[in-house]
Image (cartoon, rainbow, N blue to C red):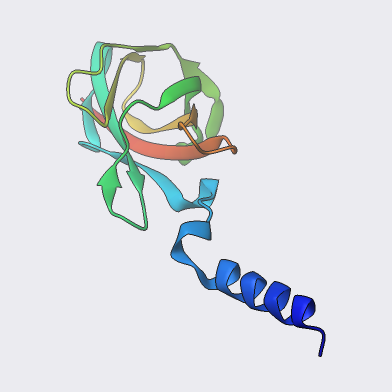
Length: 131
């Protein structure tokens, strides 16, 4: 066997199984509610954590690029409401203010960018608005 081919093959195998070459993917992240039950009415605060699943740690500094809040958990996806980001005080916790117009299940659909991750993180967090 050609010595160059042997060396190239060995290098490829080492690179393939080396922990430094493990690539993250959008599926390695998940959004979770901080508290799933929220107050029904205007100006309610909701918060989510973005978790890196392999490490179990909250992800700081993500940029939320898109949000949508609707009642799809109660089969009323057309029922939407406004959702506005507020200041991230606790690292890894992303807070929003929303006007819940009806008690029931609400889905906060999010898209975020994480530094070093080429893919957009997409997730849905379900909240229950209580009277």
